[in-house]
Amino acid sequence: MGTVTVSNGDAALGVGGGIANLGGSVTITAGAVRGSHASYGGGIYTDTALTMTASSVTGNTASVNGGVIYRNAGSITLLASIVAGNAPNNCAATTPLTAPC
Image (tube, rainbow, N blue to C red; front, side, top):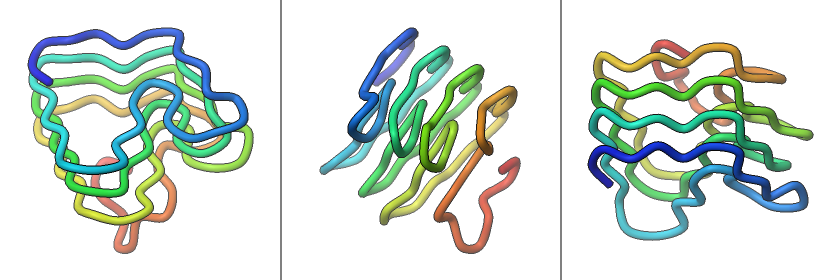
C-alpha cells in the first residue's frame, strides 16, 4: 500500500473499518490507519498476510472485537509501528499475540 493514511472509515455492520484484507497480502510502509470503526477489526481486518513498517494504527473502535486488528487468518508483522488508543482492545484472534498487541 505504501505511504497512505486511512481515516474515519466505517463498516459498522461488517469488518475492517479502515482496511478489509480479504485476499492477497497488504504491506503498509510509513502509513496510518486511524479513527475507523467496524464490528470486527475497527482499523484492520485480515484474512491473509499483513505487514506494517514505521506505521501507526490509532483511535479505532470495534463494536464486537479487535479495535485495531482482527486477524481471522494469515500472519501479522509489525515493525517499528505504533498500535495505541484502540477499543475495546488493540488486537484480537491472534494466537500467539503479536507484539505490541
